[in-house]
Structures are given as structure tokens and as C-alpha cells.
Image (cartoon, rainbow, N blue to C red):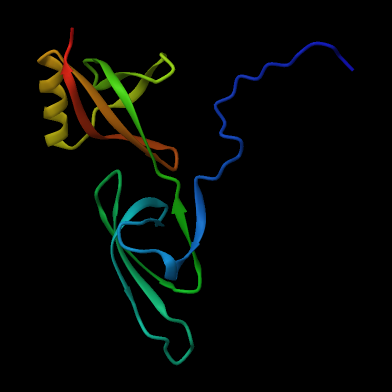
Length: 160
């Protein structure tokens, strides 16, 4: 065999799935669920009684965590549903470019430049006004199923 070491540059997440299965009957309000291939936050759950053919059904009303669209799904309570892995990460805002992308500082000290400004008008104006006012801003980025979006903002005081 060879004595040389191999170095792999990889952005892979060790084969970790974007979702995990969970029984429909155990998913509660404020939990997460995949409906029509979109990660959603459950806002309402109702369970129907078992019918003539034996399955109790769960009726989910959920809101897409990235587009805020309302989606519904009805699943037998004994069946498995896909639940997305949702993570939230805080980054310090460094810069806003003219084309609507933000430059963020990660905890390791590197920069992350592949995120757009949020589409939510209220959050967008808060970020722009705070940045133009010279404040140090920390944005919270929510990521699920390969998508990322800025979802919250914290002001950590004026820049020195």
C-alpha cells in the first residue's frame, strides 16, 4: 500500500438524511413535518376516530418554514411521516452587497457569502436600518432540507 496521506475536501454531512421518520400519531403542534416535499411547522393537529376500515387519521395544518405558505395533509396515525432536521445557527453580519446577498462571520472565523437577505419586509428593513446605523447585528439562520434563510435578528450594540 502507499504511505501518502489522503486529504478530502468535502462539504458532505456523512450521509446524514435531510429527514427522519416519525409516527404520525406522535407529531404535535409546533413540531416539524414534511408536506409535499417542503419543511413545515405544524400549527394544528386533529385526529379522527378509527373508521370502518380501521385507521385513525391525523389531519395536519402546517406552514412552510421558508415560504410561509399554508399546507395540509391527512395521514393514518400509525404510518410514518418525514420530519425535517431543522437547525438554527447565529452568525455576525459583516456586510450587505448591492445584489441582496449578505456576508456573515461564522464561529470558526471564516465568512459565509451564499445567503440572500430575507424576503420578510419587516425583518429586511430592521436588518438594513441596523446595518446602516452602524450597529453590530447577529442574524439567526434556519436551515432544513438543504435550504437556508435568515429568520431572526439580534442587536448586540454599536460597533466600536
